[in-house]
Image (cartoon, rainbow, N blue to C red; front, side, top):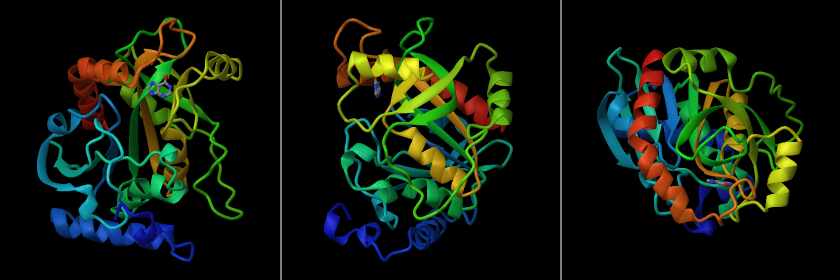
Length: 277
Ligand code: HPA
């Protein structure tokens, strides 16, 4: 399914919601779980959370599910899991993200979110690794996303679909997260297209227009989740200070390593938050 020419979402006449429904049916069949309550997308650094949330009852390569593309990057594991929490809630853990910078279009980027909604999930938890702008933050620190600025110029919405984005990153869910860890700070996430990291001037712009976090994934997914009627919780792991805030050059290796170091702590935080939802 990695070939651009035979991907079902690349057919402009196809209905992305029907493809998401087919994907949800695949997930129900392959996991034996008819409905999920919560969906969780794991970004860099958050990968270990699945083990801590509860018991994994099924794990499958995302490529077995209609419309999922192969992972583009090492460090982004293409696995879907069905996990049951100690309180009996079913969590669909999505370890397969398609980024906008891969150039396959927004339909493919948000397919996992639409599929999650079609499995029945009412809560979408989005996590990512990102650059930090606030001077009080340090690499390895998890923060809540309070709002976003979409600088991609793209949208998952097609046609005249006017959707309200007030309280997009649910205040209620942020309060739940803070009840687990009162020290969690929050900030506005600016999504750039990437895949190049930002210039210091772009980071300065992001800061000037009210941004605190720079990344390449979550805003488009959050819009699709809102369209699907889900309540959204967003977390960023600050893997590095954004370009120009840190004076040394950024590297993908540094981002991966910061994620690896922070993984035990943030995965346990995330598992406790999911347990409290
Ligand atoms: N910018 C954009 N995306 C990122 C960064 C960054 O500094 N770090 C990790 N993902």
